[in-house]
Length: 321
Image (cartoon, rainbow, N blue to C red; front, side):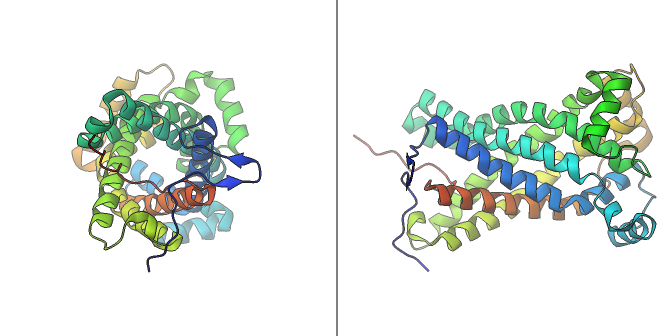
C-alpha cells in the first residue's frame, strides 16, 4: 500500500544530517554492504560447503541432502558450517568495499558524463562503477577466500579457523599463497558483480515503472520487497555468468602446486574436467546466489532507508532547462 513517506532526502539524526554523496554517506553505504554480504554469506555456509566439495569432486555426494547427512554424521552440526569464519570476515570486507565504492564510482562517472548522458547510458555507468568497485573489493576478499576454500575442500578441514589458516599459509607459501587466486577471483566476481548491479538497477526500475505510484510513495516494507524481488532475479543471472570461474577458483586453491603458474594449473584442471565440468554444482549455486542476492539488496536498501537515504534504483530522468 502506498504511503506518503519519502526516503529521498538526508535524515536528521541526533548528530546532524548525513548529506548524500558525502564521505559519511559512502561510509554508511559501506557499512550497509558489510552487513548485507557478511551475514548472508555466513548464513548459507552449508550450501557453499557442499557446492565447493562437489565442484572439486563431482562424485563425492549424490545430492545436497546426502552431502549434509554424511557431513553431519561424521562431524556434527559444526562440520556443516565448516568455513563460516573466513566467509564472514572475507565477505564482510568485500561487501563494504563493493557497495561503498559502487556508490562512489556511480556518482563519479555520472558527474563525468553529465546528467543527460548518465541517464541515457545508465547501464554503462552501472557496469563501469560495479567493475571498478569489485576490483578493489576482491583484493580484500582474496586471502579469506583462500582459507575458506581449503578448509571446505579438505576432509577434515586442515585449519582450525581463519587466523590459523592465514598463519599456516604465510609460513609455508608466503603472502603469495594468500593472493594466488586473485585472477580467477576477478574472473568470477567482476562479471558477477557487473551483472548483479546493472541487472538489479534495471529490474527495479522496470518494476517501479509498472506500479501506479512513485517509488518514494511506497512503505519501507514495500520498497524492501521490491529490492528482494529484483535481487533474486538478478542473482539467477549472476550465477550463470560467473559459475565457470567459480569452479576454477575452487580447484585452483586445492590443486595448484608450489611455484606453478596460474595459466598452467588452469589448463591442467580444464583438461581434467572439460567444458561440462565447468558447470558442476550450477543448480545449487543458482538457489544460493539468487537467495543471497535478494537478501543482500533487501538488507542493504533497508539500511539505506534507516539512514534516511533513497533506496537503490535507476536515476531519475534529468529535467530539461
